[in-house]
Length: 562
Image (cartoon, rainbow, N blue to C red; front, top):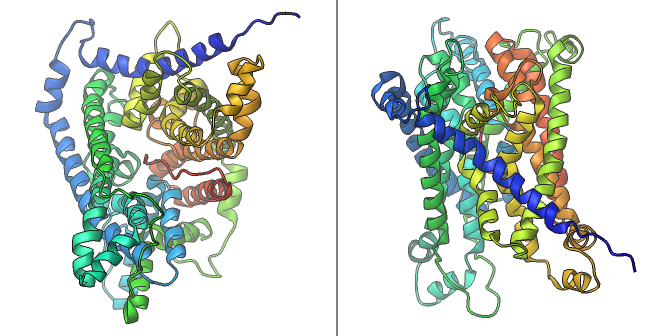
């Protein structure tokens, strides 16, 4: 019998080394540059500048104000909506859930642009309609989106779904038996809610508040669209500005590291809160949640939910459609102003569109394929304890969730703009960024699938002489087929939406769709932006619908904004 060389160990060791390089290298360079001067001598001067220079202190304070405000607003909006969808007999509850998910499809930077079309002081459609309806003068402004409250409002529109999902899912899981027992013992509906339902849902609400705080703190797109024209910075836009003229990249690591540390602390706090157990089911199956009868309030409750969903979904989508198909983007669409010229211009006359679409699809496909493969191997190594140090691999695979996109972009810029490997100016550096950003969600998705997969077939394959690599290819991967396809779709969608890292790393030859939209915003071409934005929404929406219809898809939208 001819012997065969088993390369399984070498191949899996290569994947493990690649994972370490992917995560550790950019963070390592951030630390090195953050604590050294230009001569590479140890110094704390960069951090002293960060916490004493008003140019940095003010954005830091603004960021904290935004994060706290968004967290409170999201809890105030999402908790009642989650309760009405999960625990009442409100009609069209499933439809409301789907519309909330539509907020996830919308990149926050695109939502900010849509709200510019709606609420810019002079040209905003809502202000124009208000002046036309009331006969007010041209200087009358009902809404001004270029303010700190306007920015907080827009960020809240695309952050509250995270809180909603956590609260609604927690309420779905509360056994109805507990509430039935309270009622049988004489508890009123209010006392049952106060003593049973609310305490059990509070950990999820607290975790949602932390997620909302984190998203608002690390967001780049919306502040770049709305804060910069208003004349103020957040920490993410300040980091981005350090790479503009005159560049000061040596201060970027010092500004990025506090964001990274605070993100890690918040994620640990979230894990602690979600790790609390409000109840334990002992034996048997729990009863279905007991729905609260709203009576005559059913329709008002539905209208209230739909009214809230107008803000992140209906109004912004309407504004984008209006701008895409109108001769004048800032004017209401009529039969006289209807045109397809904007679509023709974007896809046949705008030279950057073809390159950006090509780069986006290429990077999306490569990132989804490489990311799914890497997540599969790492999930196998950790789920089956196949190598020593598998717990370290699991930690590294989930660690990038603590790295804000703008921070990762800075780390990769520092790592690959100098030897021995120079990747800046190529698609490879964007590929590394996308792989790092999306690895945690892909790994967690496949790790959850591994837990439901019995290892008996794999063990039988090993007993019959197959290597680990062949077992993974011929046995495990086919059994995880739906989950692998869903993970691929998920990474592809996330790459199409990503802006915060790409805006640091792109060049004229590596521009992607999100960066093209951002650049067009600076030139003020709102019609082209709207056409490209709708194209992005249609593309990502279609892929998400396909992914959610797969039987192996158990994940959701990854909680990372741009």
